[in-house]
Length: 189
Length: 189
DNA sequence: CATAAATTATACCAACCGGTCTATTAGAAT
DNA sequence: ATTCTAATAGACCGGTTGGTATAATTTATG
Image (cartoon, rainbow over all chains, first blue to last red; front, side, top):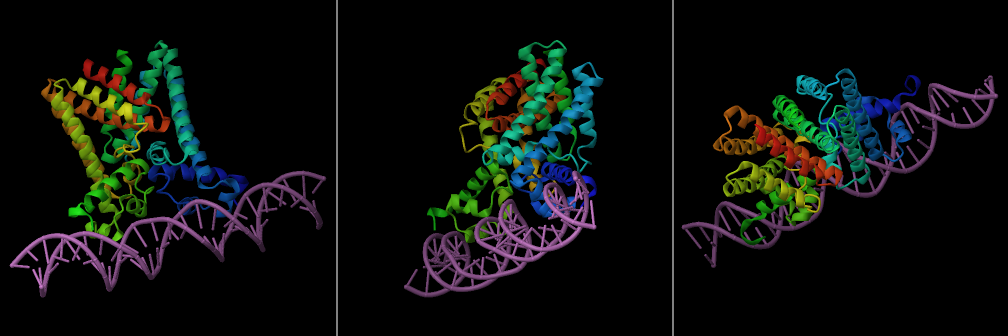
């Protein structure tokens, strides 16, 4: 039994990482248990509804990681362009070498959108929350409401697409291109 | 035994469809065999290296579907903006209702980029081929080489991201936004 | 028609899957 | 120290997985 009851958090963090790297069906409970060192009884103690419930917690964890990084950048930079550039620069620099990032939300969403409504919803809400943060920042910086809506969505889909292509192509160039094109879109709207 | 030897094609088409909808690990051989009606012996006859080999054939099939649609549009429209708009409009109209499209290449890539080099490579080559077609068209229409490179990649990643978000959010709005933003990028570059 | 090659068909296999269950251990409260 | 609750631990389960093997059937060829 671990020190002071953080087994649940360890499970969530481990699942979050593994699902980002190999997706929901590509990761078995055994993989999560082995990497986390938590016994199966604990997993079902904390997540009595099973793998799907753990996945939802993992998705929310992933969402929060991004929320925290973006929010910190928005607090640091008044200019959303600068904030997005920094975010993408950071991703670009570490995505290929890091074995912790993977494809946030995207793989799980692609696997389960038609087979698990609770998971699809968790992914959908994660995307929505990211967009809401982008939108709020854009509004605050003078973009009108329609523009903020569209650009928040565009940035979100571009980052997802860029991460996917960077991983697939083993190159950070897609993220670099996304950084430039997002900059162009935000400057010219 | 089916008429004139198209079992291999049927397997590929079925696998292509199922992998797009649920990913590589989300689809078992049994699912493919049941939907296609082809016996397992045939599967191993045509794909003696197993599931991975079938997946690569399926990825190439998916790639060709998109190549054919885009090429037809590029032949029909001199203006690449018009062609992309038509492509995205078509996707936007059918993506939510259709149970045939799914997420071309994206889900499989996200699941396997770190665990199967042959599959990652097949996905990478598919993306590259799509971009090459976009690039050729852009060059032909007067965009310079650097612009063509960046825009081809940007369009590719935006379409992937937009499809993913449309499926996850059960809304065609991401594809509509992608259509508009791609139009802006192509117009202003 | 006979033979060889191609294709089909299905039983079998070990390993893996998510989930259930129960006993044990640890922690919290008194 | 005792009692109760929380958490751990791991065996067990039926079903599924991708792959192997072999026989049967069909097709192609001369």
